Image 1 (cartoon, rainbow, N blue to C red):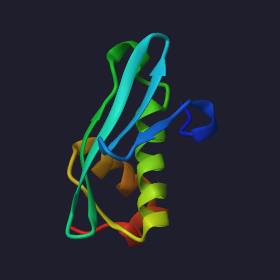
Image 2: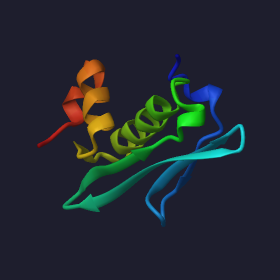
Image 3: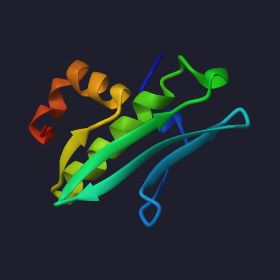
Length: 97
């Protein structure tokens, strides 16, 4: 498994507040909202058919990197994003409850 962003053709639709990728005919997504200058990661969804290949990790990493570039703090509201930031302390400075 890898979460190398270069391995995936990730798209960010700022208007829809969505990061997505398509792999082997399946769509994966991360949905977020903005509240009081904070990115709230609401949902990360990866179809089982493409699971275990680092897709969710790449989506969360892209969202966190975007939040950092925007100067936003992050609330990892979905369980996958919360687990990701626990495993990646380099993002700890972004996280708020």
